[in-house]
Structures are given as C-alpha cells and as structure tokens.
Image (cartoon, rainbow, N blue to C red; front, side, top):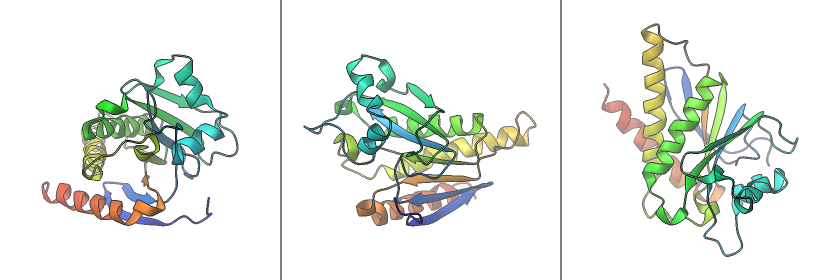
Length: 205
C-alpha cells in the first residue's frame, strides 16, 4: 500500500472530518479499521479485493469462520480483533456481518456504518475507516450506495453530539472518519459522498 494513499476531504460534521481514501481494511492507517463480511461470496473463486487481502493478512480467519459455522457474518454480528499482525496498519479491526449477499440491500450497509461508528465512539478511537466490501463479495449495488452510508454516518455523529450537548455523554474522540474505496471507483464514489453530505447538511440549516 502506498505510504501516501489518494484521499479527499468530503466534509466535516461537528468535530469529525470525513474523508475518502484509496485503501482497504489492511492498509487503513487508523486506530480502527471496519470491514464487512457476508455469509459467502458470489465470486466463483471466493473473496476478492480488499476482503481477500484482509483474509490473507489474518491467515484465512475470515473464510475459516465460514467453514466452521461461526455466525460472524450474520446480519450485523460483529467481531472486534485487537491483536493484529503487523501487516495490518490499523490498531484494531471490526468485522460487521451483512448476512446473505443474495438478500443485500443498501439499508444493510448503512446499518453496518452505524454499528461501526458506534463502536468507534464507544472505544474512544480518534480515527476509523469503513470498507463496504460489496464488490469483494461479488455484490452489485445497481445504484449508488454512498448516499446511504453517508447519511448513516452523519446521523450517528449528530446523535452522539446531541448527547454530549445534553451532558449525557462525553464528546466523541472520533476526529477523522474514512470511507475506503478502490482506485477504480474513487472518483465516482467521492462525487456521490460529497453530494450526500451537502444534501444532508442543507436539510439541517
């Protein structure tokens, strides 16, 4: 992974800067790296892309979970790994289950973002990254999923901020949030994320 991956600031909400970067669950240089896992891959030869890279870095742990029948990939099940090999740049890794890929919907990925944001806030990390992992499992969205992911992120950040405003929680330590993207899809994803950010923000002004 390039030491200086391509990245772009998408916006800022409260104290959290939101970016998109060309890296994956292995290369994300954050305190927490979040990736999604389906119950199986639609690719004939298994996982591809960033999910495959993460599986290799974990010595096949993700695919072993499939074969061992552990329900880690069931909808919104989570696994938090805090002892990672040196090949993974992040300090910890959260895997969020998305269930069966045949029944995927954008709402499921948005819920995975919400779960990941809450984990980042609860564990008081300053930086986190999220990999949707759709293409890695052979899932074709058909329409842009980025607006759903951005909305879920902003809703959780605002909710956490409101609790802090009311004196019911500490201000989130999360200062930077990254959406992971492949180089091929970076520009298109960035456009969708930015449009979604501006739309969400305009509805609150």
